[in-house]
Structures are given as structure tokens and as C-alpha cells.
Amino acid sequence: MSQESSSNAASSSALASTNFIRNIIESELAAGKHAARRWSGRPGPAAQQLAGALDPAKIRTRFPPEPNGYLHFGHAKSICLNFGLAQDYGGRCHLRFDDTNPEKEEQEYVDSIVDSVRWLGFSWEEPASEALPEGECNLYFASNYFDWMVEFAEYLIASGHAYVESQSAEQMRASRGTLTEGGSESPFRERSVEENLDLFKRMQRGEFPDGAHVLRAKIDMGSANINLRDPAIYRIRHASHHNTGDRWCVYPMYTYAHPIEDALENITHSICTLEFADQRPFYDWLLERLAEGGLLQRPLPQQIEFSRLNLSYIVLSKRKLIQLVDEKHVAGWDDPRLPTLVGARRRGYPAAGFRLFAERIGVSRSDSLIEYSLLEDTMREVLNESAERRIAVLDPLRLIIDNYPAGESEDCFAPNHPLKPELGKRAMPFGGELWIEREDFMAQPSKGYHRLYPGNMARLRHGFVVKCTGFDVDDSGVVSAVHCDYLPDSKSGTPGADTYKVKGNLHWVSAAHACRAEVRLYDRLFAVPSPGARREGDPEDLERDFRDDLNPHSMQVIAAWLEPALKNARAEECFQFERHGYFVADRIDSRAGAPVFNRTVTLRDVWSSKPGAKK
Ligand code: ATP
Ligand code: MG
Image 1 (cartoon, helix red, strand yellow):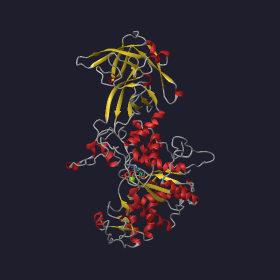
Image 2: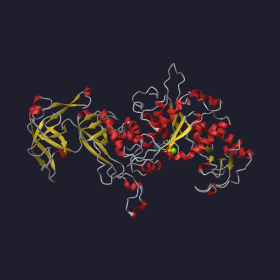
Image 3: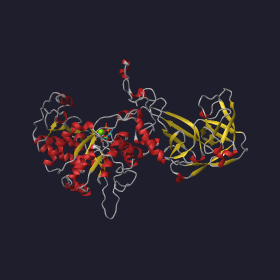
Image 4: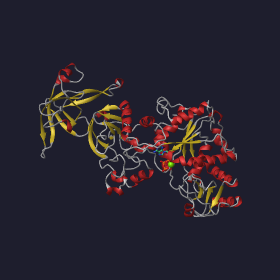
């Protein structure tokens, strides 16, 4: 599916509510700003290659992950925003790996990020067609621009805008000043252009150890904005890079590399999270200098900040997620309890749910904490539409129908989707021994209990009305079976069905036909809304760690009885198990004939009523 041909999966236009970024784009379009845009890189053999492939008069956004971890729910917000804007304005969104730091980046992360963005319903290929023989493939790696970044750095040196610093990191820190006081100039600040160029070349040739020198932009040590006090732009790192191998031993700093990546790719709107607002003056300074020097053409990309997604009951910091995986609090990056996109997929959260969620939470510049239940409600809403209904008994108790003909069975019919009669009905075998939920029987009923108890009648959903005649207990006094008689003329869908008025309506599966399966009941990974936050009024709570708030009941594995239609469920198929919630056949462990199901979400929110929960 391409960005432009996608119809339902990733199309947000139908829902698109306005936001401040859309407003900016609308007013620019009205002023004709983007029609005049041209590719902005200086022509060179490689530059022309990139330039030729990029249609200049388009809105261009980018999603720029660093391949040093798996994508999480916060990234989904950024992906939906960037790809969504490009779609809405007939533009393009680039998937660009911001792989300028050789130490933490790995191919495994690159692959998983590509998969997750595709899974969310977005893509970066233009379909090859006659009308468009040379379609764009908007997948980029920042590390492919290292040659240009070095060339641009040499230009900055030559034009007096950068110098080689030979103080230690410690000394640089000490002279940087504070938030309230300016910094002091480096003794190396006035090196000649020749000396600087020579040193930078030698840095590139590997003549110096890590940390011996850095290249700094020459801006203003007295600036009120600490980011403009001669920030480092290149450092020495004798490290192998996942893409460029051992070719380089100098690597650009993120704040230097990022604006250049945007400009080379003709990005119109470089959308990032709020913490980069203080970096914007440097972003603009750098691109202005390069444009002045004729290395880039105007109009230049503009950086726009929005507030990041924060969700209650989870953590979204990469560092913390890595800790949870490394310390084995979860089973891996795709553990269904983790707020990673690979985890969400395994959990059964539909990609459409993330797109709808992104639309609902909107985009703004003010920080906020979104209730986790909003995400869950959105997932329920999507699943309610898409998931077929099935029956599963999770906590089984045997129901024996003493007056049912021994050894016989018959079919009952249950609708696959109450909202979509066109999906038809399926047969559910009924027989003399069934499994029902343990909670659907009480030897001594409490007030208002309408399900099975001795002497009471209840309907077996889509089947017959039964009357409870007694029960068996095992040696420890636990109920081991319930006995009843069925009313042969009460079958659902027959004229007799309405003659019996009963209040209880139970689900069941036939013991002779049901399929035994592993079911994993997942719940929230953390037990409190703000993991690691100090508890109010508890002075002893200084050392609180987010791991102290892990929910000990976040996973329970059970053996359940499923109706036979579930036996051959395909991996990733989602169902509503009636009365229980939404479940998905695990994409790794489930097999046709031996399904394994994960609980995606319960039918109703049980968390907002818990003590300590915020509503
Ligand atoms: P770090 O920089 O600490 O490694 P990161 O979460 O910023 O972590 P990146 O790979 O740099 O990871 O993020 C890619 C993009 O996703 C960035 O543009 C970033 O702004 C955006 N992003 C990251 N976290 C969130 C979030 N919680 N909400 C919205 N966007 C986010
Ligand atoms: Mg980042």
C-alpha cells in the first residue's frame, strides 16, 4: 500500500480534526509557499541522485527514529502525525533512520522499526507505474549523508563558523556557563582556518584518539541560549557503524546532523517533541549559514514542536523499557504487556486502534497525561466492529444434563457478529456434558443471583433452558459438577424458546467437542498510574523506583475450553470471547489445531474503580 493509494487502512483524512500544525500548513499553502520549493542541496553526483528522486513541490515530513530500540506507543503518535499530514496534503513522509551514533545502533532495531511502521499502515514506496516510472522510495539513512556532513563542516570552518576545540570534555563543561550566566571562550577559538582544516582532516584520518578534539560551531559563548554557546558538531569515535562499517572515525552530533538531513531530503516541516524547542535557534542558524554559502537553497525546512505522548500506567522511556527487558521483568521486546508496538501487536491491539487514538488525542504544545483507559476504549471500539464473537470457558465447571440422550449431540447456531448479520452464524455442538464458568453456579445463591443454583432455571445461550437439579462435591468440598435437566422444547430460534422466561443467560461449550487451549490473561504491567512516583504523604518513599510498581498480576496463564470453531484460528486472528473480552491468537506460539490466545483487553474497564486509580 502506498501513501497515496491507501484507502482505508491509513487514511486519516476522513477523521482529520484540525490542529495547530495543520493550521500552519494551510496558511502556507494559501500563501503559495510550497509551490515555489526546489530541491535545496548543492548539485554533486550523489546530491543529484537524491534531488532527481524528490518531487520538490510537495509537503514533506519525516519520522526519524534512532535505531537503538524498539518503537513504543509514543512513536506511534509521531508516526500517525507525520505520515497522516503527508497523506492529507498529498505529500510524502520519509522514514529516516537517524543512525549517526555508531555505538548503540543495530540492524535488529532497523528491521523491527520498518516492520512496525508498515504494521501501523504506512509505507514509503511509490508504486512503480508507467505514469511514474521512477517513483520515490522514501526510506533513508542519515549515515548515507556523512560525506556531505563532513563537506558542510569543512565549509563552516573555511567561512569562520567552526573551529577545532582541544580542551577536554571536562574543561568544555566548566567554561560553558550556566542557565543564568554566559560561558567563557575557549583558548582554541581563534585558531586559523588553515590550522582548523588541517586538524579536522587529521581527525577524519584517525590520527587522534577519541576525545582528543571536537569540532565546534563558532556562535556566541555569551548567548542566553546555552545551545548556541559554540555547540559541538563533530566528535572522534573509533567505532564501527552498522551501515558504514569502519569508514569513519568522526561522527556528527545529532543536533548538527538532523537539520542537514532534513534539508537534504527537502523536508518542509520537521516535527519534533517539545524538548527540542531550545535547539530550534541552532537548527535555523546552521541551515542559514549553509544556505548563505550556497550549499543549500531556500526555502529551508522549519522545525515545529509538539508535546509528546505520556500515558498513565506505563513508562515510555527507552532506558526504562530496556531495563524491563534486560532484567527479565517481561519476556522480551514483544511481551504483550510492554508498550512497544511489537508488544501491542502480539497483545492484539489493532493498528487501526492506534490511528484512531492518535486522531483522538490530537496534537498540541501543552504537556498532558493521557489516561490509559482512553487507549483501551479506543481498542475496544475498533475490535467491537471487527472481531467475530466466539465462546470460551476460562474457569471451567462441568455441567451434566441428566435427561439428555446419552452419546448424542446436535448443533446450535450462534451469530458471528451481532452488528453484522451478513457474517452469518456458525454451528456449536451441544451435548449431555458441557463446560460452564465456575462463577455461573452457586450452591447457595446470594441475593440477586440469577444464574444456576439448585431449583433455578437459566438459559444456555444459543441453546436450551436448563433447570438445576443438584451438584457434586469433591473430597475437599469443592463443587466438581452441576446437574440439570434440559427443556427439549426451549431451543433458541424455535417457537418454544419464548415460552420460558428466565433471567440468567450462560455461555457454554460441549465437553465432547471443546478444544483445550492455553490462554494468557494479560493485564496492565504497572499497578499505579505513575510508576515510580512518590506516594503522597509517605516521607519514607524517597527511593521509589518504577520497578517497585510492577503489577504482580499482570499475566496469568490458564487452560481454557474453547468452542471447536476456534481450534484452527490463524495467528493474529482476533475474537471477542463473549462476556470475557477480546482475544488474539498469539502470532508466535499459536498453531492451527493447537491455538494459544492472549487477552487483548477486557470488555469493560475494571481499573478506574480500583483504589489509587485516577479517573
Ligand atoms: P531517545 O532520543 O531517548 O533515544 P526517543 O524516544 O526520542 O528516544 P527517537 O528514536 O529519537 O527516540 O524518536 C523518534 C521520533 O519519535 C522523534 O521524532 C521523537 O520526537 C518521537 N517520539 C519519541 N517519543 C515520543 C512520544 N512519547 N510522543 C511523541 N513522539 C515521540
Ligand atoms: Mg530522540
